[in-house]
Image (cartoon, rainbow, N blue to C red; front, side):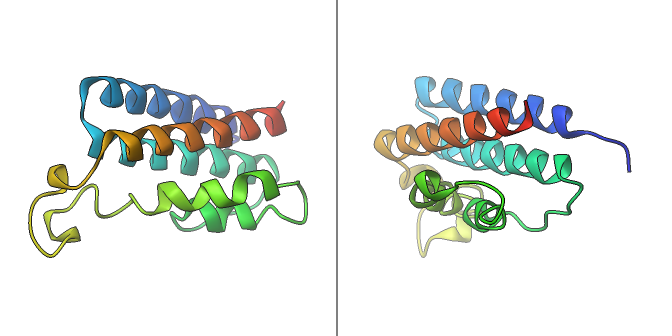
Length: 128
């Protein structure tokens, strides 16, 4: 398999920019989902740099898989936040009633973007 870690990191950074733009424009559900995607892609870049396979979409679980190689503890609590937005931010049946747009707040979007930013910085530092 060809080495693509920097491509993954570049896309993670671009997804983070997308999340920030969505936050600024009030598209909070998309900001939350884009933040989750950014963190996931950055972590998968770290796995690829270690010649390991990463499966799944949970930011928390991907981060926990690096525990024996890196100090992930400062990021672990924050990694749980983007995971909450992987499905409900995208699908109308993610909640009992209403559309996703009815549920996501600016505060949640800021929090998700902030945690994704920390995770991407951590990943970039560990790829350097």
